[in-house]
Image (cartoon, rainbow over all chains, first blue to last red; front, side):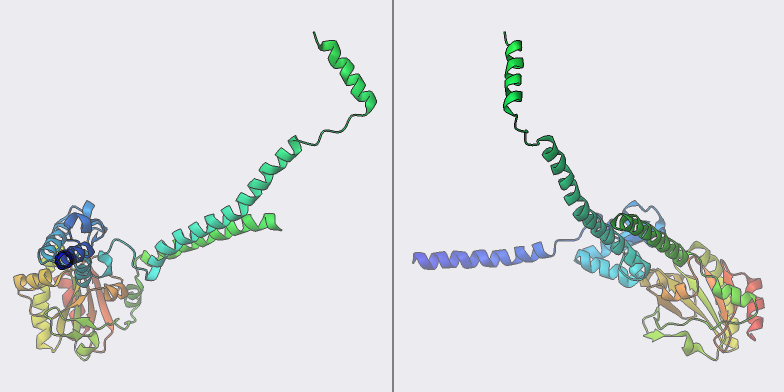
Length: 157
Length: 179
């Protein structure tokens, strides 16, 4: 009996969790979330900072699409279908836009390569002075040792 | 040898960045190849692409108008000067129709709904195509609206107006294509 009850509870939980998971996978789109990822196609600035009649028309269109229950990705796709790739704020990887992705990647690779060369050198340099600062003390011969003892004894109170 | 490699690589990288910058600026600068060709008196071939028709009746190319004089007009519903010239273009359409020609509108960065509302508002009877990705506009060097290209029956550009079209320009350009 208890087993059946537990199984029924687990089944109910699973059923409840499924729509929640679906909602988590496709969160409801919002104008503020989309605005900074698309452009005002006439003013050529991101929509969230654009103030023009065309920007307002784009906002109205986005609100309409959201009201239709479209996800953020679907809204963006619908905008591209109307205005072309130019409506996307992020470069889309064709033509000269590839540079926007390639240059930062190349710079990161160059910095990593430079660090890989420079860091071992720095380490070697840091190790060398330490080794030089602590050379093995040369052994004193008997005469020098006696003289040192005499000198030290003279300074002792 | 190793000591020289690092400054050499840095100079190479800087040169590559400058080259990229020059390339980017050149790509984004105005393309006036067609204007220069028309000004010299040679009639360049009108660039063409297959585009969706604004009213949703499939795709069309400029080639499908071959044999007719065409006034190609880039416009958008958000473009204020386009409203000013719309009546002139509709008048030109009446004249062209009598000679078997047509005005062809190309919408630029505009939604279907807004563009259709513009067509209704100004009673435009000529067809319009949607240049969604802007590639046709790019091939005509179009970056600002409105712009108009007058194309002869063989598909060659005979006159260009970058800005609001005037009746004077239309009269002269249409005469040139036998209208």
